[in-house]
Length: 245
Image (cartoon, rainbow, N blue to C red; front, top):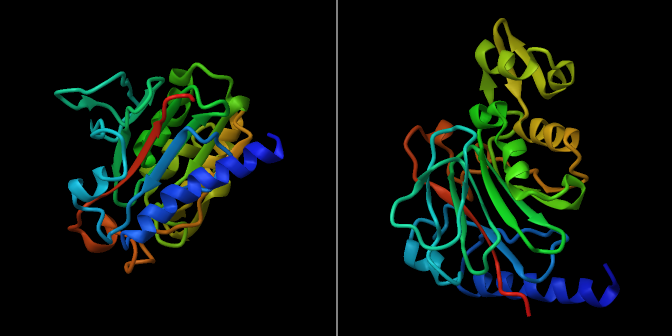
C-alpha cells in the first residue's frame, strides 16, 4: 500500500471514529490495514443497546443472525425478513451491514485486502472449536494470505475459567493448543480465547491479525459480560463495504 492510500485509509477510519466520538460514544473503530470502503465498529455498554442510535452510523439496517454457538456461515446479499441461523456471515455486496451480538464471545472481523468481500464471526469457545473461523474464511473464497482480520473484545485469559470439556475440545490431537490454557486447579484451566483465535487463523494462512487485548470481564465500566453479570444485554460488532468509487 502506497503512502497516499494509507493516508486516505486513515482519514476514512478517522471520519467514522470522529462521528462516533462526537455523538458521545466510546465505541471501537478497528485500526487495521483495510481499504477505505471497508467500514466497521463495535459497540460498548455505553449507548450500544439502542438500535436507532447504532443504525445512524451505517448505510442500512444490519443483517442480524440467530446465533447458536455453532459454525454455520450465512451468505448475505441484501435485506432479509428472517435472521439466518448462523454464527458468521459474509457479503460481497455494498452497503450490506453484517452483525453479531457479543457479551464475552469474541467478534472477529474479516476483510479482503482489496475490499471485495467482508465477513464477521461470533467466536465463542464452541463455535471456535467447531471451526467457525476456518469456515468463514472458506466462505470468503479469498486466499487467507490476502485477508485482514481483527479480534474484538472478549473474555480474557485471566478470567475465562473452563473445565475438561472445553480443554479437550481444543487440545485433543492438537498439542499447540495447550499453550492457550493455564492450569488452575484439578479439572480447571484458564483459557485464552484470543491466543486460540490467533493460532487457528495463522494455521490456515492468515498473516494479518490485528486487535485483541480487550477483556469484557475485567472492564465493567466499558463492556458487558454475561459471565460476570449473569444477566446482561448484548454489545454488537458491525462490518460493511461501501460502493467502490
